[in-house]
Length: 435
Ligand SMILES: Nc1ncnc2c1ncn2[C@@H]1O[C@H](COP(=O)(O)OP(=O)(O)OP(=O)(O)O)[C@@H](O)[C@H]1O
Ligand SMILES: [Mg+2]
Image (cartoon, rainbow, N blue to C red; front, side, top):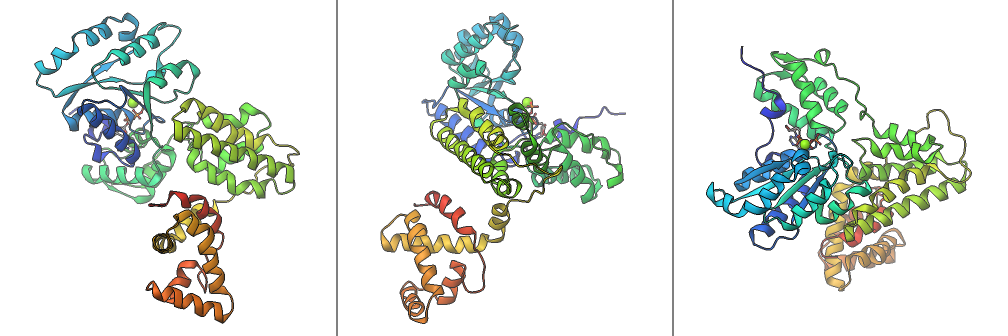
């Protein structure tokens, strides 16, 4: 009998293109390695940050594989003795060419697992290694936001990976089923993907446990273990809204699958209904949520990742601890964010609108945010008012080659309802291409 190969190894992506849905991270990683290849490294090191099983280690190896680099992996004991690190710093240049590699990448996997007390001086040694290294260094970490990692973070470009969505995980699972020649029922795969909470490793392991050796996989074959991170957004919000203490609310941010980008519209949409009975509560919660957005803007702009905890605390504890908090029912009625729903529903219209805005931007010599803030509402007003103004609009648009119907559709008047989309879009508008 042949020994079983763990599917997480068998199906580990070898190329960047096989790594699913980490496009931003891949691009950042490639830009960084390219800067090395041009002889002008943007930073000596990068730190891949993300929850378990999102592809950090995989990305590091895939990059090396694709570029023909050798990976030299370091671990805590190397740091403790310091011996190997000195060797690397000392003898690295000659080694590379000896083996015919174009180069090597130093990988320090799971740096946040370093026991700082035990490996005293360990962090300092890595920082020194980064400063002196002539090789690119990749670090990975689940949760490097503790202040003790600050110096290390500062030495590196932080690249954030996302927890994978259920759909991405389904894609990965389906591919494996095909490859193994197993007929996997969609329901069975869904169950596994749901339970994984964005952790691909967990999902693949569950699949292997349930499906290996079978011809057909049905829902009944699947037993998924309840995982600590099996926590959907409803539960996250419920916990936040019910929290009475700071750390209680903040605790959701420690869940491996906590997805703060997704959390934001959820909180935004549910605050008014959950706190409906107290205007102070709504006001405080919105205040803190918007502050978290300000902090987020600052992080994006300046890469000051140590601000991250403040952002997370404002968006969770800041929403939970409010003046005059009304009593909440045992299970608050929470709703799916309208914004996400609308964005999906109005995709076509938004594309039309973007095209119109872009056109007007060029014709009027103004920025696209100005177009969407001032001109679009004006056009909309014209389209919905008396016949004279409507005729005027028709003539104006005709010059640009638009029919009245298509403009009406684009503006969301005359039968197509896109109301409520306005504010959201205006916030986004400065980001429009060319704007
Ligand atoms: N984005 C992805 N696309 C395809 N497969 C993935 C992806 N992420 C993870 N996997 C699969 O899951 C397994 C685990 O991924 P990996 O070891 O890279 O996770 P990790 O982020 O390093 O997790 P940890 O923090 O636990 O070390 C891989 O062997 C691979 O098969
Ligand atoms: Mg890993």
